[in-house]
Amino acid sequence: MKKSLLVALLILVVSVSAFANSVSFDTGAMFAFGSIKSTTNGSSSESVDYSAIDIPIGISYRQEIKNDLGVVGSFGLLIPVNEKGGSVEINSDNLPTSFYFAIKASCLVPIQKNLSFVSTFGINYSFGTKTITSSSLASASYSYSISQFKFESDLLVEYSVSKNFALRGGLNIGIPLFEERKTTSKVSSISNVNSSTISGFRMSVAPVVGVAYQF
Image (cartoon, rainbow, N blue to C red; front, side, top):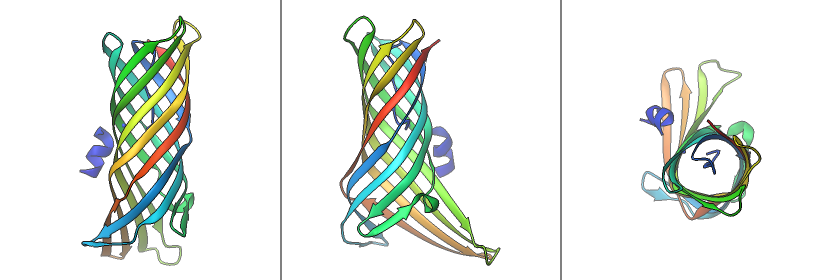
């Protein structure tokens, strides 16, 4: 299921264009904050403060439906920088790079001849796994997986520099709806799997810049 969703199911975390039908490329920096607690086998931990920084890189396609209303499909990578839960900080070497896919509705509001405001809202799914093989024991490995669904919205401004190109910038805002984290340790043919559900209120804010091309 996870691998099929990975292929089938929106970061950039962002996307829509002032053009009726277009492809866009976006990047930026995503800052997440809030509080989390984990639930494993019915047992919940205490809530702790949470923060994280990731770099989203993505490609999106916008299809206009009617009167500046459209649908946006996006996919890309979410590259981790660091993550902190309570007093525990995890650097990027131990965090998985996630693949994401999103589907969002979009609305375009012209401001001036070459300037438009664009808003989107929809659902984003991401999944990633980091596997580390023991340097001292070839048959031992450790995997850390994260999967997440979140509500996502973009608030963007686009400036058309020519008939086919536009520059874009703004904010991407996300609120996680469901998240699961799984750790798998394996020695030879023996595996130990622990799965936890992450809850608590969190949100992410990502300043975004990009370019769009009409074809």
